[in-house]
Image (cartoon, rainbow, N blue to C red; front, side, top):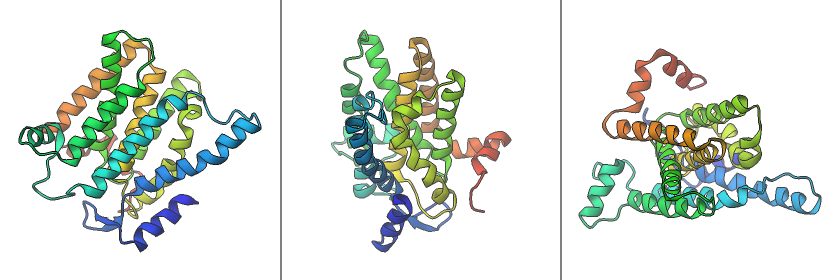
Length: 265
């Protein structure tokens, strides 16, 4: 109910962004998704506490600061960033160069804020220093990786759903959904509108999806698995700095097929 109403609100307010095909779409849909999750928390928290229905995983309290904080940083970038301006710093290298020149882009603020939030929510896990730093790096880099994916409608949502479904099937568990379902749910609705080119997630949405994915990896993988995941996401991040991920997807038929499912022609 909230997502389509929010899209209409964005359109009425003139919050639009041109996509890669030159079409003006409601933007940023991610802000609507966060709103849907927060509104849903109210009745869930009430019945969880007063009726003993066990609707919310207690572990969510540890991670919610990162989820909401990273969405806010994405909204800051969507609202105050320079968008498609050719002078806008892009990628880790671009933002680092801007900082070295004495400039503080919204992308740099987002990176610094994500580091602070990740360092905060990962505390208290009992990790040694190396494990603590590795967990922070995994959470931040997965969040950023989803930002790199957000160049075509529905791509972020498909990747998130495939990741969560993979862990649920591999472990024959609903633990990821029980922990993060209140934030995952709106993305299932959002996919209909992003694939149909009616709205764009923006950094708000892609950051939130990346945060969800990062938390799933941290909570479902063992120490070795997290290190393997970190190595993979580091490789993807470096690749994304120098190559187009969209062009890479286009070159591989299985990836191209999955990427195109449901998308408006």
